[in-house]
Length: 100
Image (cartoon, rainbow, N blue to C red; front, side, top):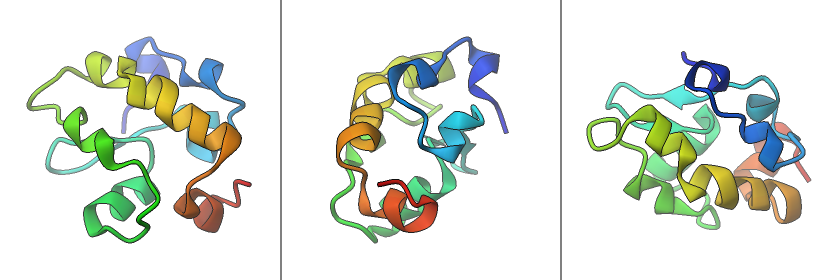
């Protein structure tokens, strides 16, 4: 598992770090080469469990198409995710991590 510090990006500066994964500077990389902000969002998007989550991450999260730096610098990680956590947390974030 890589940490956000290892790729010289600080997502915590973009939000108040209510998310335990962001707070601990962790990301999830699956066996297919996809980068996710956490295991809960990875499972949610791949299994289509919670329809309110922004699934546009799938257009940018493949390490086969982009570098890790590019993925982490994308607006999904720097804008979409922090805005959701700050104003209207997705159902999975509320259910699994108690983010409200």
